[in-house]
Length: 420
Ligand SMILES: [Zn+2]
Image 1 (cartoon, rainbow, N blue to C red):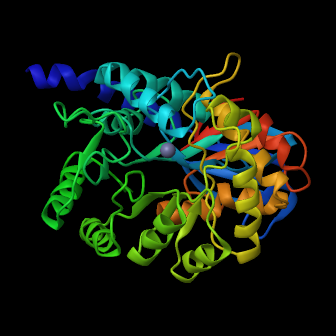
Image 2 (cartoon, rainbow, N blue to C red):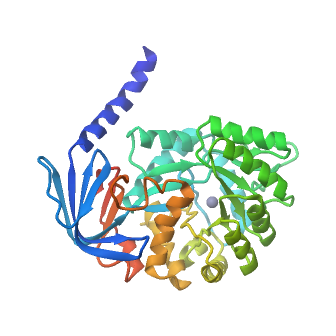
């Protein structure tokens, strides 16, 4: 009885969501962008039924009872993807203290917050990301004790609005990794934020624990401690994740870390702030995506990492020259008055613009390329029949000026209008 009582509200919401989506929707798009080819076609219509795109073409008739959405004055494109979020983490910074001090403050603060609060933070950030046009995110940990799994499930059940979430659960690191405030008397202070794993058995157990508790990707930290994971360690983690059908995202900020992660066969390397052209070449050879978390100037300053902006712009230039696959990822975890997690995240395109990426290239990092990394390219990241109806609209032409992506004025998620 008790179980039924708990489930009922969620099922009711789900039923309401399905009912709302049962009505077909016909969208009239003034211009429709295909990020894969970097081209746009005019006067297109998109027919959506049960949350899925059924047809795309210039002269589709609205079926009886269809809701018609007129976006003929706007450009329609696939929903955007952020491959590096921390939805269940928002921290207040004073700034100007450098990366290690920042991480200490970050984790000291988050350890004082209950898991319940982490979920609530996640609900707000998920809502705001969706409103800014991010219909899919990969969430790479720092979510307390699996707050990210609960958030993902709540979004999937229709309880709260949010993007499709590919979540990492707890971040796996060597002993004490990434948390720089451990004390000998309190070696477990970094838990439950992290899972410490040093031996192959511990690594396999950590991956299995994440799988058991709802992770959809495995996040590891290769080089945020004096003792790096070895290539063999990374291979052990990648193999165990693969057995459960999951990919591995690796935090690697140093040249050595990037090389180890790439040789170890991870799917993506996060940050790689100062990776050399040679390291980026190795990533390309090994089919490893760069998720650069390329802070724009103001984000760098807000994080107390002002010097990082130019570093990531220079690294983006090298990455573009090498031709390594890139997925857009923001790593935004701080609040700014008057902004949301969504508006701060979309502003990361400034770094790509500064590095000389074309608008079409920027758009691909946020759609087709990111969808491929996340393993959702069969359902999301493009507007064509059979794909989930995740789409956004902007004024102007995002193939001429990527800045218009900062002015998303319409959002549809799985066929449901979120914002118009
Ligand atoms: Zn991060």
